[in-house]
Image (tube, rainbow, N blue to C red; front, top):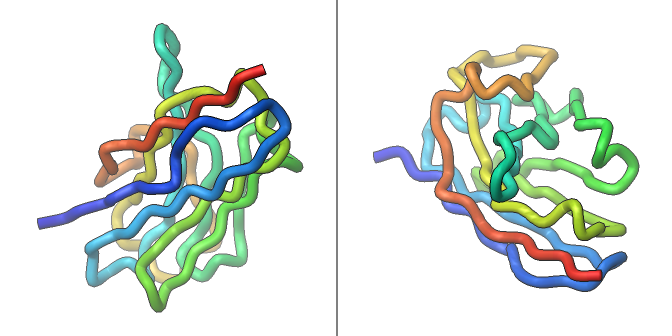
Length: 128
């Protein structure tokens, strides 16, 4: 059974930092790009950051560039999202996701249609 389990969410003051983690139970973890999405109440889910299988390509939504950093540890089957300089507008449920295996690919996608598996999410709340 495929599992993506997020952790690290919580409540934070404006300007604070959090690190999200997502443990992935896939033997093909090293062959898959990974991504973080988020969804706020009343808004559509949006892509936040993604990383390719070899961790040498990353993409970020304009709203988080320079503040968020995605990384992965292929030995631990885990992907991370370091979130700095948090703002109230970052408040959302954060989901990790992975697409189909594509070993060696030098790209990743923030397109929800490319997602093969989703986690259940972890809530991040930033207060002013």
